[in-house]
Image (cartoon, rainbow, N blue to C red; front, side, top):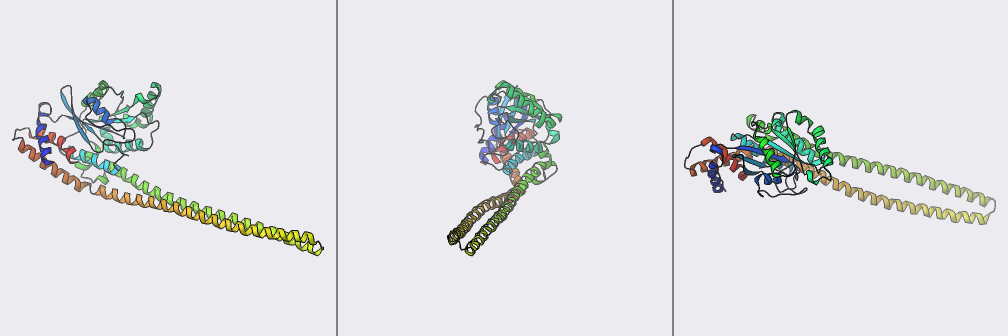
Length: 398
């Protein structure tokens, strides 16, 4: 892998315009929003695999070089949160790792194209999570270099409905970002439209993202960053939600048991009252020498007692079934709660390990760059080469 990386780094010296490292633009958004498809359209060929609405094909950051107006542009395809195969923690770590290492190597993003599919008729679930995490990653200052783009217009039944959804995004969900300077566009899937969006970003003055400043300039751990704190809040919320669901279900079952026992006790009292009434009638019949009536009442009393015993047996069977059913449900929910607890602890540990993992990746990057410099034969352009090789090498070591 080191040899492959060094060869890529050496060849990178001739990739930019006048030895400059070129422009870097990241694409972000949820799974299925069209990030890979957008890059393929700009590149003019299928440089990346394309997933669908449910399954992601981008589970790591992909780096594709294109040339627009004679200038080198590198488009970074990123995995979305709520990814098919990666946990949100792993997605954050991969994005943060790329952003921190590239920024440390002197590379700043010219901007970010954030894609949102119009096929989402409501901003819920993964769409809202991606938007929230995106804002934490970018920060207020970085929003000036963001282009908010609606995609998949052709999959909406009517043009009017597509425009309505696009406008709703601007009026409600993107409003504060637009006020901070973010641009807005409706992408029709055509090459001209995609290239125009990239060309628009190319005019930006590069601004570091909040996550980059936090990790590199402020030396924060990932958990201490705004994005890390947001993710941690979600993990805590999930654990608390499982705890609450379990507690509420137990309380509900206890209330149901109390209610069932109360109802059963009322049935017992009613049965006893019926037996007393029959007994009193039987005594009156005997006292008045009404033997036939007394015998009929005796038979009725026996039936009533047998019916009461059968209802008691049936009630106990039902109670046992309910207890077993409730116990299974509690066991299932307890297992989910325990799994959420383990996941929380694992994600916490994974986030805490980020700093050490970054140190190792940085060392690998520097080693690969050193080998690439040696292979290049000292041909000059050290600063440009450092940035270029970082761009080539980062996807290989993340």
